[in-house]
Length: 427
Ligand SMILES: Cc1cc2nc3c(=O)[nH]c(=O)nc-3n(C[C@H](O)[C@H](O)[C@H](O)COP(=O)(O)O)c2cc1C
Image (cartoon, rainbow, N blue to C red):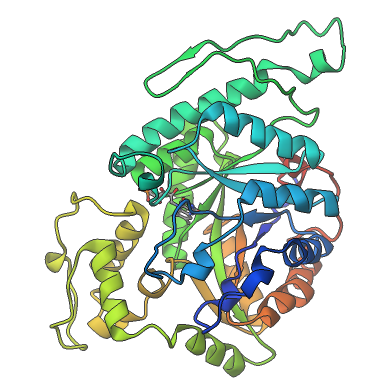
């Protein structure tokens, strides 16, 4: 009998609930182990698939972009300390392929995998910035970063395979041996083998973020899950259908790439309380900042236009111009082409006031119904939870919403496996 589809749910460990608050993002506490361990334990108690840590390799000295939230511990080191304090939950770290040596990354991820008993996952990013911290050269274009990411990921995977677990475990008749990889490519030269054996449970699952054409092709080729920015159900359906087609074109199962949108939720006991929380979390974004955000995403200046004027496709700058993130530019361009919004409508879109994530505000029941609708429509395979507004949002998500999904048979009530591969049903 075919198993029924179940949701895959991860929790972001970034303090998204502090967004918009005029504080220091948690003070020194945000760098202590205790807070993150507590969050991971709460997520484990709710039987989530994994905790997840995004990352950046730069900090704006002028405080742009709420610098306190951009300051963060190295995610792989942080998750290693969580590994010791938890038993089941997956630990997905973010590591860029644009600036690191693949041998070091292969070893660090394999170390996290061993130290967590098979619970590591790798969120592969090509980075939105930070080149200045590694080289004098400017940030390479997105396409070049993906070309490098493909080679990088291939090298890491071959390093992971270069020292088979069976050899380490002394299985004399396994027919495998430790072998150098002798990689000599456009970007990297790595001889190998890795000085750490593979883990008995298999390799860490691969996550990916970035949904330009190059990003989608990379995900379809290599990723087991994609962290997606899908501000509305239509963009979720489009992305998921496209990735399923592309995975098949690479000879993979259409189910091989799980689409996990960021779900930025504002949960409260009443709908109006939740909506107030949503408004408060965005109140600090002045009109000026919103206009600047539109300009930085798609290069369109709208300050001079009346708020009730419609923005249409013919106003859009050339689609080929370089942008910081093709994913975010394409989402906003598509919204304008399809909806001809007024300037005012545009100024409150998730693409403009956030990271283009799906936003839901209401009671646990309301948001659970939204999730059900997206799941049934084929717009996602699960979510990465981004709690908004207050810590209570997170508590309600774990204590009320997730159990409701479990009651409906859409999420596990107990862990059945020990490793992240098992939680994701990859084995
Ligand atoms: C949902 C999402 C999350 C991302 N998270 C990170 C991150 O944590 N760290 C990072 O350096 N880049 C992150 N990126 C940037 C991507 O890795 C990529 O460099 C960027 O989106 C450009 O790729 P694109 O042309 O496919 O959009 C993220 C992108 C998206 C869409």
